[in-house]
Amino acid sequence: MIKISDAELEVMKVIWDKEKATSVEIIGGLPDVTWNYNTIRTLIKRLLVKGAIEITKKEGKTYTYRATIAKEDYKVDVVRKLLKKLYRDSFSELVLQYCESGEVTESEMKQIAKEMNNIANQK
Image (cartoon, rainbow, N blue to C red; front, side, top):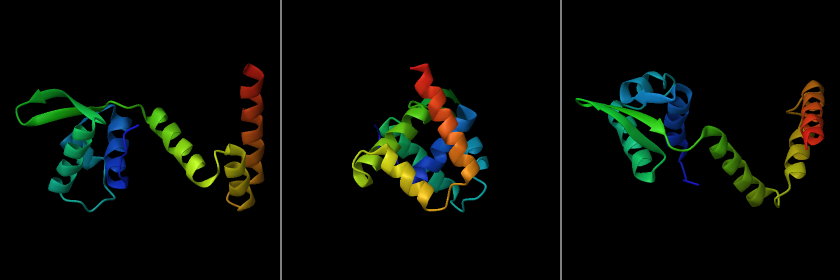
C-alpha cells in the first residue's frame, strides 16, 4: 500500500468524501488547516506521484482528482501495520488495551460485542 503522510492524508480525506475534487474544492474542504494554496498544491502533486490520486478531468487550468485507493482499504492497511508494529499482530490485544484504558464506554463495548457476534454468525 502507498505510504501517505499525515498532511497528505488530510487531502485524501477530502477527495474520499467528495469522490472527485478540484484543488479549490480540496482547499474548501480543509477549513481547519492554515496551509496556503501552494502547500496544498504540493501535497496534491505528491499524491499524484505516489499514485494515490489521479486526474480525471482537465478544464483549462483546473484539474479534477479522484482517489485510486479506497478509503476502507487504506484504513485496513494502516490498522494491519499498527497491529504488526505494536501488538504482535494481535487484534484482541489492541482492543483489550483500548477498552482497559477507559476510552470505550460500556455501551460501546456491548455494541462491539454484538457486531462481532453478528459477523461471526454470518461466516
